[in-house]
Length: 187
Image (tube, rainbow, N blue to C red; front, side, top):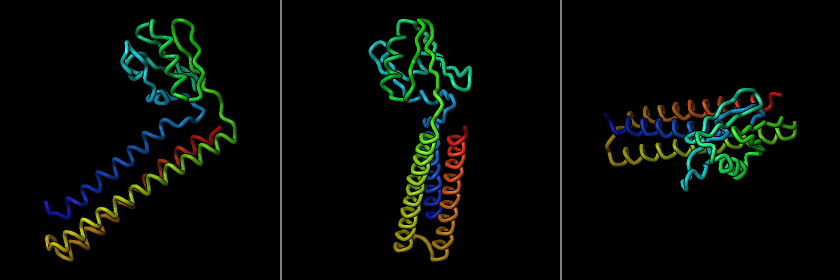
């Protein structure tokens, strides 16, 4: 494989990681609908070890505005409740001794607009990251050309591939942001 192909391949992988990071961040954003992924960041003190909530309880979404958490071991109900409060998700756990219910309150119009603005801002941050990856790839290509490891033609073709990859990555980011924005603004 030629040196310039390695640069393009590295850029493609970096863009994919950036998009995956954006998608991961978007799953944590509240939209007024119940989503089990909202609890992914919650860590429970499970016998002295911070453990992801999903590893010590069954998480279900029985209704559009309700998440239920049923621990494998009922003795950690209080710990789960405490962890959900500390995660600062804006949810109030309701513990009945068997199961924890997390009703998802509807978002106000103003809050929806704020969240949509945050979604756009996150999208822009990730676009900047993709553009930085493009810049780094182009710098690597310039270095390869200067060291005479690739020809002028190879450099030009590689730069065109880099630009295509960047445009595709930015289009994907725009798509992810648009979908999340629509989901947030939906009443």
